[in-house]
Structures are given as structure tokens and as C-alpha cells.
Image (cartoon, rainbow over all chains, first blue to last red; front, side, top):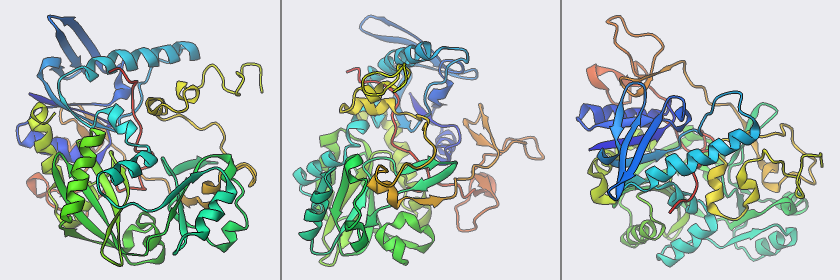
Length: 321
Length: 127
């Protein structure tokens, strides 16, 4: 049985996993979806109630019936031949999604994660609701495009508020990469809320925290790592200053463990990374989940065997589906 | 609005997701859409969250090629024995665990906030 990995061809955590799987004798077939249709070929025939055929590159092939699990790890978009018109390219994209994607989606395999479940799980408001239903504690949160609502919400907040994006927090302008980290709203911000009306914004109660934690869930197994910030900016958003962070493996409290297991089942995920604040009363406050969240740097820092657990999950494949 | 724009200012060549604003499936159409505007708009119009954007250096990706046999990124040139060298092995960080043959994992592990858009999906709902 073979594990299929869809990932970009310079993704180092994937490289690490592929090398380890190969060393352990686990068959793996890796491809990037940008290889389709020029370097990746699908030949699938439906008969006798299931799909038969192969997925192949210039150097290897996998029988569809031999696929046990698929790790869908941020692959690139399909890349078509130059010379197609916009209309032809758009048509080709849609056909590829529904054709290649449709065959793969119909296979009885374990997905880590199934793309549609992962996309649903991107909705942060859905995350908050799901987390609450699963028994987790979440901060009071406002979603609005009304500037007055931001002021009203903040006035009822005991410790101030923060803003954060719903989706990707990066933009490239004038050739420069810009990142929107979680930001605290200061007095001056409330005097100038221009741009709130431009689109939806997420405003949340600031949690007076002792430290933060990331919990990586692989199948049913949890890896909790505390993240201690030693700079002012990292205290607001630890992603701003990786050099100011220290990490420690931590046992996830039972109620949080149970809540996360329910969350994974509810949203149909087999892998996710969860971020928590731990407040002054040692309560774990759910901030968000990321079904494509990174784990390698935490493994490097703590020795938590996340990669091997992911390998075992994928190798067991359909048995975990 | 130019001649090719629809009633909402979209063009026929725009990715489909713009036309399907609420379905989560439409997020899967957002894969690596190239931004058309490259300079910030006026402060009145610029989304409030982007007022808080900070500049960061773009991630540096070392020179490499993809090895079909190993199925990983490798250094452009083989080592002295002619073997391909995975990009993630090097004599880098001493704190990092050994790879086969005592080689070290190259420090190129992604961490959140450094890798850009990570939550993007590749095809349409079919089930």
C-alpha cells in the first residue's frame, strides 16, 4: 500500500517525512499538483464499481487501488501549457479540479486532510462555535465592518482588544512582503478606524496570558507544546519574534484533550494544529485551529515525535479513515 | 469599470471564487492568485487590518533541484561520490538531529507566519 503526498517540491518537512518513510520501507508517491497535466498523468477507468488506473510521473507510478492514504500538504495550483487563452485556461482548471480531484476524492483512503473538510475548517467563526460546542473556552469575539461596533465592543472589554485576520496574514505590495500579526488596538486606533468598513474584521478580547501553547493533533494523538515569549512583540503574537521563544512539552489538560478530539471529529479532520492562551487562572483559551499548521520547528525544539506519528497515521491509512 | 468588467467589476478571466463569495469550496479557487494591485490604497479605503501590516524579508529558498529518485529537494550538484544530497541535510545547526550517515538536517524548517499562505486548497467540492 502506498502513501501519496501532494506537496510543493521544496517543502522541507515533507522532505524529512519522505526520507524517513523511504528508510522505513513505506512506499510513497510524491507529486506537486503544478505538475499536472504536463509532468503528472492520470489514467483512471470506472468499472466494476470502482476506479482502476494509475497516477504517474516520468519516473514512477502508483495504482489507484494501491493508495492507502493521501497527505494533502499545500500543493501548488495546476500549471497548464503556455498559449492557452484566459477562457481556455479557466476551463482547463475547472476540468482538472473536477476530473483529477474527483477521482482522488472518490478513493476509499485516509486523507490528511480532505481538502473540502480543511477548507470548511478555515472559517474562524465556525472554529469558535465548534470549539465552544466541544467544551473549549474561547474569547469574546466581534466580526464586523461597522467602526462603531469596534468601539462598543472594546468598551465592554476588561483588558482591551486585539485584531487579527481571518485568513492568510500576508500581502505583497510593491515587491515587499508584509505580514499582519495579531495587533492590540490602542487609543489612537479608536480615533481612526478608517478601513474597518472596507471589509469584515475580527476583533477579540485580549487574554491576559501567562504563556501560550500549540497542540498538534495527529489522528487521535495530541502533542502539547508551551510557547513562552520573552519579548514584548512576541507576547502579543509569538510569530513576530521566533528568537525570543522557548518551548516545553506539556500534558494537555483532560478537558482540553476531550474537547479537541470532539473538534476533530466534528470538522472531519485527521490533522490540525491548535493555538491556545493560558490565562492567569491556568485556563486554556482556544484561539484558533489550522488544519495545515506547521509542526517541524516544534519537533526540532522539543523532540516531540510528531513526524513519526504522522508517518504511522499515513502508513495505517484506510484503517484510520 | 472597463469594457470587459461585469456588473460587480469582475472580469471574465477572474478566478471563479470571486463569483461565489460565501461557499467554503470557493476558497479552493484562491490558489496562488496573483495580486493585481501592488501599492497600498488611500488610508480611508485600505482595510484597517492592513494598517497594522509590517514589512518582513521574503523567505530565502536555497538553490536546489527536485530529485525524482529520492522524491525530495536536493542540492544542485551531487557530492564527491556522485550521490544526491537532500537539501535538508547539511553541516548546519549542531542542535539538530542527525540524518543518515551523520549528516545534519539543514535549518529550513517552516514555522507559522514565515511561510506565507499555507491554507489553500486545490479543487472543487465533488461529494
